[in-house]
View (cartoon, rainbow, N blue to C red):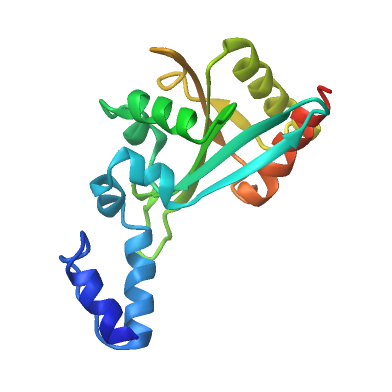
Length: 194
């Protein structure tokens, strides 16, 4: 299995990486997963598809479809891509989403000071939707959720209306709140609007 996987990987976009035994293959793949240059090499569509999950919220007469993608690169690097809005629009339409959420987590290499110090982890979140009212109301809800538990701070450089989609982005100070914690908050929000 390792031999077959190694052959497939060397023929793909991971051709620059070397693999050998099972444990080193696992370690290397884990390193690649957090390598910013790897994430930057992916197309915008592949970033959205890489770790994507759908969360439906039942509003009685209709279901709100929330798509959540996780990535390991700064939102600024992703949202500023020339094709991001076109790809996000197509992704939302093809998956019939009411809301696309992009959650990122990455290491802030600039925070490494003393020798041996680990880089600070940064978590960011972008809410992408077709209506400003919905996106801004949801952002306000997340900001105030449970007394500010998520510790949201707006990223003004990424906020605003881009083409036909509205994007609101924030740094999430509570880095422990991953998609597993945030998705139920989003679902509860939309289900409370019945």
